[in-house]
Picture 1 (tube, rainbow, N blue to C red):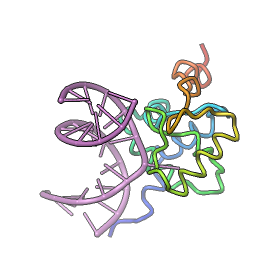
Picture 2: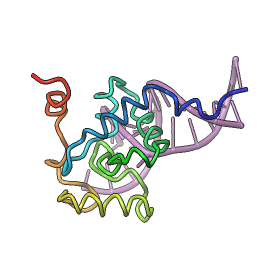
Picture 3: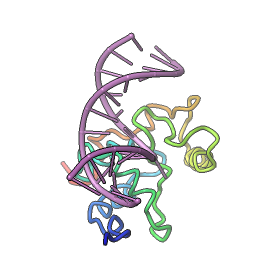
Picture 4: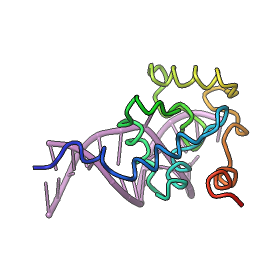
Length: 118
DNA sequence: GGGCTGACCTACT
DNA sequence: CAGTAGGCCAGCC
């Protein structure tokens, strides 16, 4: 019989959560970028699942993760998306309509430096 | 083992 | 610039 909790024990989830926890306030990242920094290229959807399964005890800045084009992943009107937009605004992230300002998206180079140094 | 689902991505129209 | 189509990968019946 399959364990339903198998995904929560996946070590990849731990790396994903670590990357998200290291995102500086006021900046955002795409799911694909998070996956890439976690050493899991092409697994953006796994990042989404990891966020969904993330325990509240970790207090992850989940609101700093959005789509590659800078839009909120949730559908417009979704309470979670509303809260995400509200938290980002509180951090000084500028919204241009549904998308965040391009300069709010952290370049991968910068985060590589943050993790591994020059 | 086969098929559906999803907090996605890229390219094209 | 907005909307659509196909692709990819892992988790769960």
